[in-house]
Image (cartoon, rainbow, N blue to C red):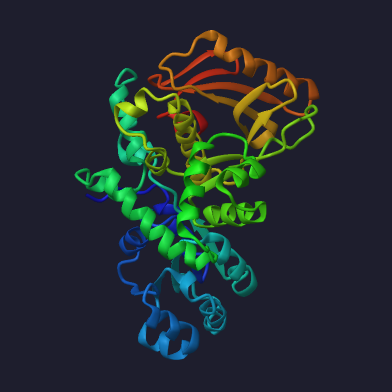
Amino acid sequence: MWIERELSNKIIELSQLFPALILTGARQAGKTSLLQKLFPNYSYVSLDSRILAEQAEESPESFFKDHPQPLLIDEVQYAPELLRHLKIEIDRNRQKKGRFIMTGSQKFTLMKEVSESLAGRCVILSLPGLTVREIGLSGLKTDDIASHAKLLIRGTFPELWADRAIPEREFFQSYLATYLERDLRQVLNVGSLRDFERFLRACAARSSQLLNKSELARDVGISQPTVNEWISALEASNQVTLLEPFFENVGKRLFKSPKLYFNDTGMLCFLLGLSGESLINSTLIGKVWENFVHSEISKWLSNYRPEWSLWFYRDQQNREADFIIQGPNDKIRIFDAKWSEMPGKKSFLPLFKIAEIFDRTGRFKETDVVLISRISGTRKIGKGRFHVSAFDIAGYLK
């Protein structure tokens, strides 16, 4: 079953404005399938093949002769030197657009190479996992807890929703093995894959929390520089996101560390050993839910409002908001994610206090406070006060 992606129109539009386009994203995010569907007339080559990757780097002229333009190049990070050759090829006819469409699973490496070799010639987009709208689950009933839990456990990789007969546990076991063997050996030299897997599970246990690198290093038995390197590898391969605290001076802040989020709740639940009833009855379900809400907000911003900023807030008085969005016209949106179906009015009180702090600065023209839960639909309950379904975040933000 084919699943339409919300990023499709943007990919087509930008491919007509630049000579080259790179689509990044985690392995199995659906990059290759999407691009082959959008550009069916392009030649295709995958640099997963070591022989082809070596040809691309060492014999670019023969590579381009064997693979005529327009060309779709899969997993271009396996031949980083090819990007330098692409610059020469593009400059032979700079005005021709959409000549090279590429995919890559390690965005940091690619962005560095593109900035050095293809500046002004290439645009980079990132394909996240599926949104609830793409999956077709935006109409879940608030009391259908089992379906909510199934969504969290199954995650948002397209293959799991295109073929719902695939068992998620086996999928993530295979995914983790492939990720450890292929991507990590490409990004960094991990001495022990077993140590890295323990590190990954320790990160999962700390998801949606402040990242304490020294504590993480102590518990896993590695150095803090190694923690820095391995966290960067997780970011580079699109497995986790570090959410930074709101940085403008709205009052003294005690906490300056980022919060750690997994980009896919299915992988998170797998690493935590959660499935079915064990998730519903787990004390961790609120944290998993917060990861899901972060993922939905991030996907919408990436697809439609990349210029908006996403943060979290926590101060010396332990006033906390899970998410802060700063949009146009100095508008601030303050969010809290709640697993409960209908959080009580008291759940708004901490957000109101944070809103007062922002309002006192006189810096922001408009402030919304928003509870995101399993409620059905979106409800405005007062001026600047909203109760939003986790499955209708797009409806509120648009």
